[in-house]
Amino acid sequence: MAAGLNSARSMAHDDLTRAQPLDIERPSELLAYLRRSGYIAAGEEPRIRVLAGGVSNRTVMVERGSDEAWVIKQALAKLRVAVEWFSDPLRIHREALGLRLLARLAPPGSITPFVFEDHEHHLFAMAAVPQPHENWKSMLLAGQIEHDHVRQFGQLLGTIHRRAWEERAALDPTLEDRAIFESLRLEPYYAYTAGQVAPAQAFLTGLIARTRVRRLTLVHGDYSPKNVLVHGGRLVLLDHEVIHIGDPAFDLGFSLTHLLSKAHHLHQYRRAFAQAVQTYWSSYLGALGEAPFAAGLEQHAVANTLGCLLARVAGRSPLEYLSEDERARQRAAVLALMAEPPDSVSALTERFLVLIER
Image 1 (cartoon, helix red, strand yellow):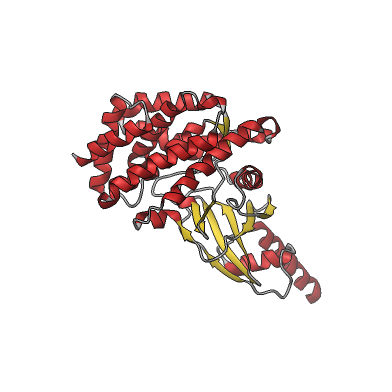
Image 2 (cartoon, helix red, strand yellow):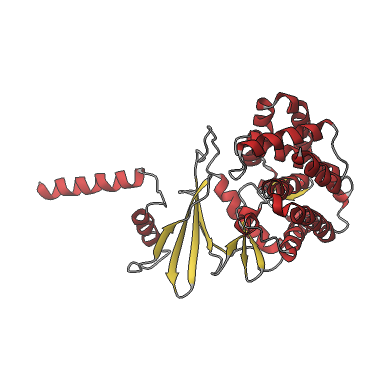
């Protein structure tokens, strides 16, 4: 009878273990999972450490020795931000799809190799970028604005947009679904901000409508210096969970916002960042080539830049390095620009720099 009771207890424990969701930020849980799933040997003792900074995922480094290391990402249903913000954890599988796709489309060496994916626990693993490497956002905030890094940033995005358009007939049809883009970008950036800043409501509502109907090529959706590591002088792009077929102008506006906001924040490097904007734009156009959607793209890029510049001071995810005074000044500058939008990236840059000086 005791044996039967012990067996029942063991079965109950196993059922409870299976019922509890895996949290990869708990090293003992992750280690047991990796062994149980056969991804590592039963006796292997990898070094496991949580990587900080992500708001939408748990992210963990698994160092296996012999120069092999993985980064494992697991989607969160509730994002780690100050306001209520939810998104379907199934988006992690969109990122795994994007990782495999971009490895084919992007310049060699700019995308990390895919390792494995788990649909039950909403996670995937990729090869870690070798050390030494630096986060490009951190470098830029330290005033390390290198022309070749900026050139690569434009070339990488232009290449992705062009090659995805060239291979559009072969792209996975699930990329047509933009629910993740809606929940992680259009709602928290444009729609939420429209509700917070009444003078911008008409501009942002129109921008949302135009963005929804423009389905032109593959859009990364999170094209930002924080998602770029620099290794051996080369840029490596990360974080592909918002990837979809849509409006390439969103990627441009999203990324230009980071360069212009840093120009605002780092007064002593303001002209260097202004030059970086021009280098980025020129490099992007050179890589984009003669893609048909290039016509008229600049004005759409300017509109998305204005939308994102405002969203990063008044939306659900404000830029953490901007002070309250800088946020107020950027908000006022963008509202003035929305009233009479510039017709080019260079005009936007010059007018923005003038307005934030006031």
